Amino acid sequence: MTDSAVRSSQIIEGVDGTPIHAWIYPAVGRTAADGPVPAIVMAHGIGGIKAAGLAPFAEAFSAAGYTCVVFDYRHWGQSGGEPREMLSMAAQQADYRAVLQHARTMDSVDPDRIVLWGTSFAGMHVVELAATETYLVGAIAQCPLVDGLAGILNVPPARGVRLMRQALLDRLGAGRGHEARYLPLIVDEGELGVIATKDALLGQDRLAPTDGTDWPNRITARSLLDVTFSRPARRASQVRCPLLMVVAEEDTMAPTGPAVKVAAKAPRGELYRSQGGHYDLYAGGPAHDDVLAVELAFLARVTS
Image (cartoon, rainbow, N blue to C red; front, side, top):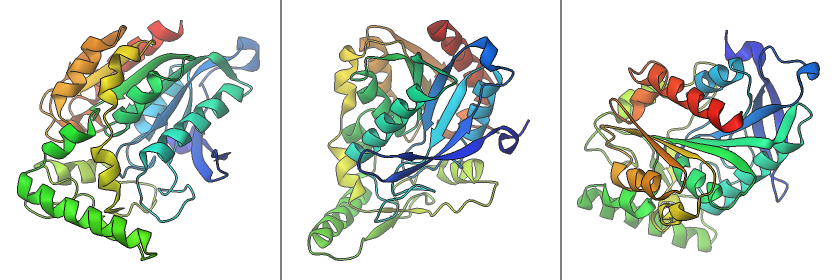
């Protein structure tokens, strides 16, 4: 089965009218006579778009009887918003909330069985929203970043200073009406960019869209300032729904310590340590099948 065989496209209106582009994967083998089904709302990490590796997860969940709504944040992918390739924590969480509420209104969906799913940087949003959206029956964060400060401190100091200088210049320039200043998103080790881990280029290859979708390898420099001061890991104790944290044993991009602590502090937290690194959870990686099995088992428990 291929994602194009089952999915459809839809525009969802964001809270301020910004168009949010989503793919809808219906629950396979389900008819109206079977009644409403659980839904999973899914989004990517820093600089990620839905065409970059999310389809294999959505296909598997759809085949297991879940409706999946996979979307691009504003400023990214096929969604609206200017400037392009800008990350705003508040805006991305607002987009998540808008899509979650849209999923609850879909005719085929049970509004009381909504699951939140996010990968990589979206772990920041998953923890924050799981602590505030009381209707969620479950949440999954895989290879998650959950503490922006820990993420920045994970960067070698000299490179971190250079990145922050660019971020501040971009923020100051934006206040004066200047065009956005961009940084490369994924680069080789030793180069100046946001993601420069030893497996960064492997991740770029593994997540490269195969449907011709354009995925610019850049991000507005000011975005890094928003990331640094966001620390949703501190809200772990406020998460009331079951929360599955899938943490890669050898993750060099998202610090694992804060994610493990979130799983321990969340009242209904669960931890799964997957083999390999940050990008080994995606299709083509050695941990993909095992991670899918763990996530499907979790979904079955929380939506039954």
